[in-house]
Length: 117
Image (tube, rainbow, N blue to C red):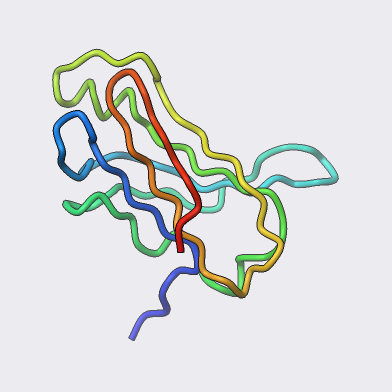
């Protein structure tokens, strides 16, 4: 059985009340010495708006991370304009043994996120 990711996300198209399927996203970690972002993984949300396998437990170390969601491309694929070309959610991990869930609720002109479990 494959190891589950300690970091998960779920993207919801709140305007239409559906999961945001086929949205590209990427996970990055800040190199605290060079102060640059290093890409760790890329993925696409599934039909349920989730992107499994973002990172494994061994790679998930304390530090600053960001999830970048390609919201503009998603809306463009639906033939709709949007205000935000992308959304970046930056967060700090100090206890990587815990599980973290970062949902993104969005419409074409707004978004919201929070730390879930």
